[in-house]
Image (cartoon, rainbow, N blue to C red; front, side, top):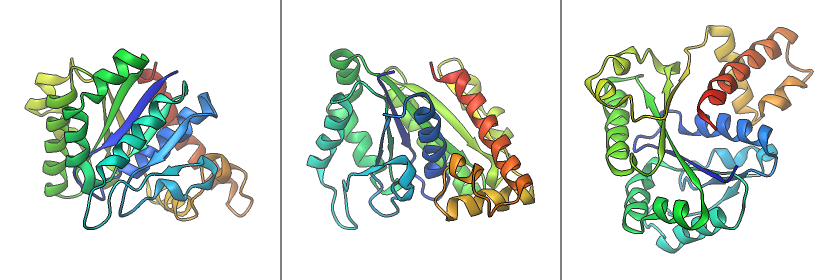
Length: 238
C-alpha cells in the first residue's frame, strides 16, 4: 500500500513496542512483504520476534546519536513499494522529531515517492506522570506533523482508563484532525496472563494460535484480542 507507519512517543515503558507488535502483524497479514524496522537503541523489543523479520537500525547508543543512520532509515522507506513500520525509542524521540522537521521528511516522502504517512502515538495512564508525558508528546507531534501525517492515537488501557483523554480540551479541539483512535482495552486477569506469556515467549498471535502447550481457551482469548485490534485497524488503515 506504499505506507510508512512510525510509532513515536517521548515517554518510555508505555506500550510503544506493543503497538508496533500489533501493527506489524496486522500489516503483514495484508502484505507479507511489509518491512519492519526497530530503531530503539536501548530496548529493541520488536526485533526479538523472529517471525516478523525485523531489521534493527542502531541509530544511537547510550552516549551518542548517529545522524547518518537516520538516512539509512529513509533509504529503507524509499527503496520499497511495500509498507514500512518503524518502532522508535523514547531516548531518540527528540532527535528523530528534529530530523523529520529539519529535513522535511514527510513532505519529501509524500511528494517524491507518493508515500502515505501514519504516526502512531501511544497514551498511557498507569501513573499521572505517564499520562501527562504521553499527552505532551501527542501535542508536540500534532503541532509539528498534523498537516503532513495521519495521526493515530492508541489508548493503552492496560495501565488504566483513558476516558480522561476523551474528555480533555485537547481532544475536543483536535478530534477532527486526528485520523483515528484505537483502544487496547484493559484485559481481565486471565487474558493479561496469556498476553504477557505470549510476549515473554516472543510469539506472534499466529504462533500462539498453534502452540499446543497453551490451553485451548487461552488461545481463544488471544484470538479475540487479536480480532478486536485488527477490526479497529480496519477502520483507520486505508
